[in-house]
Length: 400
Image (cartoon, rainbow, N blue to C red; front, side, top):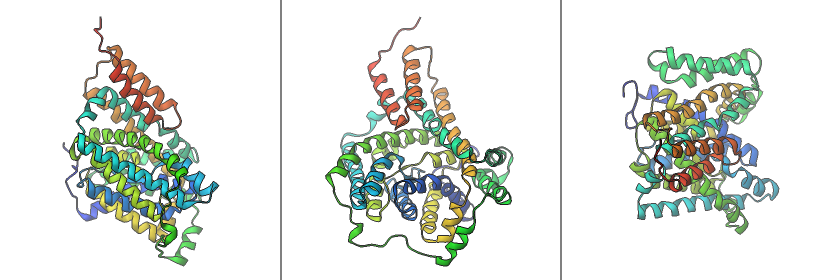
């Protein structure tokens, strides 16, 4: 389509680096929040996300423009073993278990195919699931913005302005421009805490991982039992993200290169990350939102983003600068990113011409929206299961 950069296309390096940096900004907050909450190293989590994304892109033949970041689904399990039990090795053994389960499911899908996924997830299921992936995240964006609404609204306004009125290259980096200008206003208002940046210059470069026997994950039975069931929750969430990506990029990642390849990439990335000391990884809705806003789908930008993340994990002042971005600034851009994902789901329903005069369609969409938004823990996964189940169980009825 016009004014879109397709998955296989490459822009010049001068344009690609800012676009990659934009993806880094989008994923950074959530990726480092998980280690902050669970007791892991934010720098290691950032390193694992960059290396994991490179692995994912390699194993999906660079056909899926997705970024892998720290998964929120495992916060409770990680916190229990790291903070409560002081057993990082067991937590990493749990993370390694997740990677193994993903690879086992990949092998099953390789043997039996993935065509059945399309039958399980028709547009009436896919559209609402896509919508709630974005809408369920909006409270997080609003909470971030509430730290300083004036800065958040200014940042949001800048992102909208560049998305609509900017010309040329500036039109495809609205999120990056919004963060830069929002940061500038926040700095002028005295909100930015810059002393950590100064302190970070004392130890400019440091690789965040020290390898040794303590880095070997321990296969603790209790950890395996706690982590393993969560793998199926994030597999379903990955499926939802692939539906979103297909809708936004006008592609079909579930069929080509295949959802099984998505699971292979995610599984190997999570397994490698467990040996580094990072949390389990998952595809990120924040970066899907960047694709929706910019309409630049090139996977080359994700390669660059991954390398930038690896660099950031080792260069302390750069880490500190990113960490100093006020929460309200990220909240302002997140409102747009998450809202765009929600709107993409509604567009999916419209383009598929789903008939809501049919009771079956109305019931499926209603339950998906209610469960996805109303259930606080893994609502998207439960809503997806509910939608799939209802689609299989409810009969087609002849309407008056």
